[in-house]
Figure (cartoon, rainbow, N blue to C red):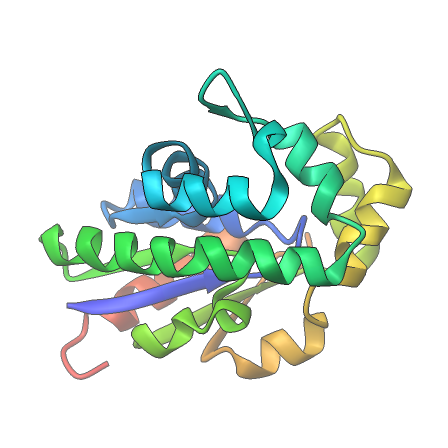
Length: 195
């Protein structure tokens, strides 16, 4: 079974692309949701987060996302620390999840595929690319975030061009190229033997 990754910067539309694959019957692992779940369920992970970021990281057993975000989002060292704690647990979890799937291929959707080193466990990586102004606009439409915060998060992410160069395939989600035909083309490619 092929293991495919989908990645892209904030607001690129990687979740939209992953949802299209899901509609086609392909199992999709959402790393963002999984990491939030693991941070609350995995006792070792929870202990490490508390040791690194304090008791305030959890409120009544639930991850205090607001507090943790405030701790890490403007501090590259703290982001790296949090990622070094969470990524190994997520990589182990997705590996176990993928082994249970019965489809021709599975997908791991994650913002930090190359940064976490999880690309080493995947056969191919799809990059979802969109122009910066569109990415900012999309992220602002989600609400609860200012333009300055969006730009600060983008600055902390891997450079878009560099990320796309590392990918095996690129889907353009720029409102100029139709999205579904690009996904269908890759779907057919992955279903072929020896792809």
